[in-house]
Image (cartoon, rainbow, N blue to C red; front, side, top):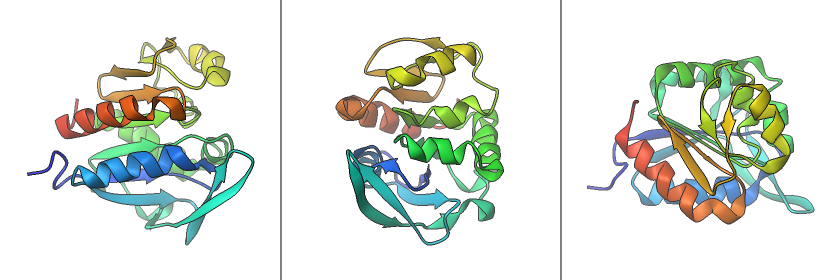
Length: 181
């Protein structure tokens, strides 16, 4: 049996996600046996940002307005500068993430992905890492921020950037396999 067989994972994303930060973890999750849905405020597709220009387009499986935490075992939040900035302005997306934190189900966020976690107001006392430019935002939200390739805190997995994807994917799969914390 695969590590994540019978697990359903939501990847919450918008246009402007960092291509490698969605594609690499999604592939790792599927290879571990998970069913993965791309959830978005967009109805049909989302486009990546790949360094200096628009990259690949991926189909959206579920609209954010049509999902609930009850339908998923874990949540992945890829980065990119535009993606989390758009998500944190969407009330449905913020409510979905807030309910995930409250549920105790595992969450993995990389690079700028933790920005939407800030909007929940539920990070005080958590240990996290992120892309360096949002460090102060996380500290101001009550996070104990550290500069490490991957940090796990009660089911919350965070990493800094695409260079940390190997460590991030490994810990994400471990935490998603453990389930609720």
